[in-house]
Picture (cartoon, rainbow, N blue to C red):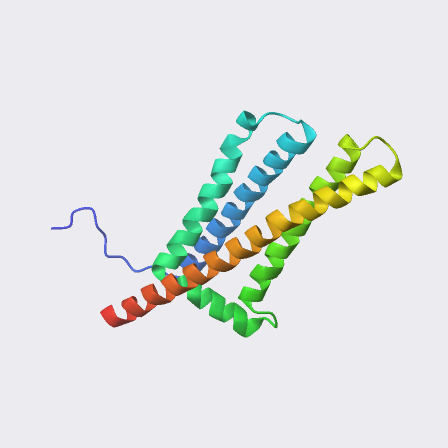
Length: 170
């Protein structure tokens, strides 16, 4: 006996539009949290305690989305659809994203080191920049490329397995 469950028909157009609105509201929340995070870290120079909430919201939202798409088997379908639409494969985009993040962080640390710790001569600033940039590059480049590539391949494999299991169940 289902007292509270209603067996009502739902218009697919309304459902699609509602999902689109939820997606847009999620993006608005992520933009606001990232903007707040950016302002608190770079403009106001506040301590990490002040932006922990925004960091948790951004991280938890992205982590939840990734886990749910993998568990439902949608992730591999999204990757396949992306690879069919785009000239560049999703795996290559992950490698290039890791390369870009690693380069950006290395440049940031190199420039910051040259400005804060060098004694003022151009040669000394260039030396500080070069040493810190190369050390950061050796640390962050393999980490981000490896992390993005391995997490993508594991998620894609798990998503394909979930999708295949779902097909076998039906």
